[in-house]
Image (tube, rainbow, N blue to C red; front, side, top):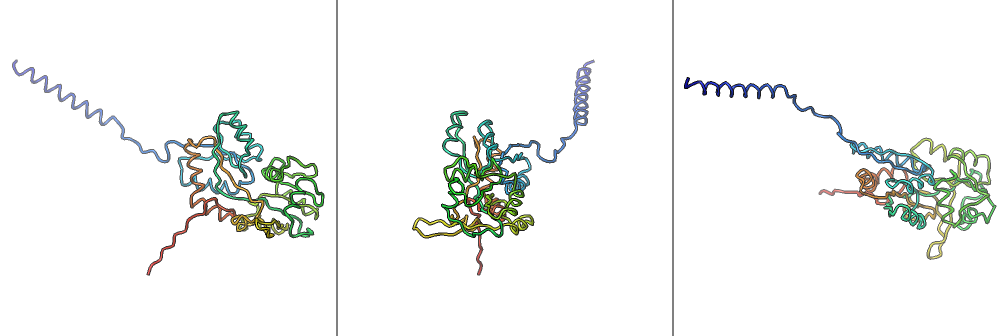
Length: 305
C-alpha cells in the first residue's frame, strides 16, 4: 500500500508523455507557400500617347517586383485629368505639368497638393505629306496656324481631347480653333495626310521615336518630318526637328515633359514605381525607345593597367 501513490504518479507521467507524442505526430509540419503571400496593386491612368513606353516600364518593374502590380488604364489626357480630380488616391501620367489653375482647383476640391515628377521628355512632332511644299516652318508661323490667325495650311491633331491639343493650344494661348480638326488615331492622321498635301499633322514624338519597330519605319516612309526654325536667346536662328538629340539639348521648341503625378507618395506601390522610373534601368529603357530620360543613366568605366 505504501508504494501505490508512486505507482499512480508513474502511470500519470507516462500518460502525459504519450499525449505529448500523439499531439506532435498529429500536428502537420508547416507548408511553404510559393510566390508572394500578398500583392500590392495601384491603378495608373496614363495619357494614351505614352502606352508604348509605359507598357515597357511596367513590364520590367513587375518582373523585378512580383509582389507589386500596376493596373494601367490609357485614356485621352482630358479623361486622365478627370480621374485626378475625382479620385483622391489616383495616380496619372500626362505630357505636361499641371497648370496653376488646375492645381488650385485640385486643392480647393480635395485639399491636396499633387506631387509631380518628370521621368522622361517627349515632344510634339510636325509631319506632312512627302510632297509638302516646305521642309522648315518658322516658330511664329506654327503659332499662327495653331491660333487660327493664318489659314496657309490645314492643321490636323491626333485625338480631340489629347495632350497634343492641350499642349499646343496652351503654348500659344488658345483654347480652341474652329479651322483645326482632330482624327481618332495616328493611322487616320497619316491617311489624311496622304490625301492632302496642304495639311500639317501634330502627333506625339513617342509614336515615331523607336525606329527599331517595323510599324514606325513604315509610318516614317509615308510622311515628311518637318523642321522648326526659332531664334535662340542670342538672336541666332536655330533649326531643329523632333529627335532624341534635339530634345536632349533643348533646341527643339515643342519638347514636353512626361510627368508622373500622384496625390500622395505614401502608397507603397506608387512610390516604388516612381522611384524605379528615375533609376538607371528605366533610363536605359527610355533611351532605347528614342525618348530622353529626366535623369541620364550612369556609365561606369573600369580602367586596368
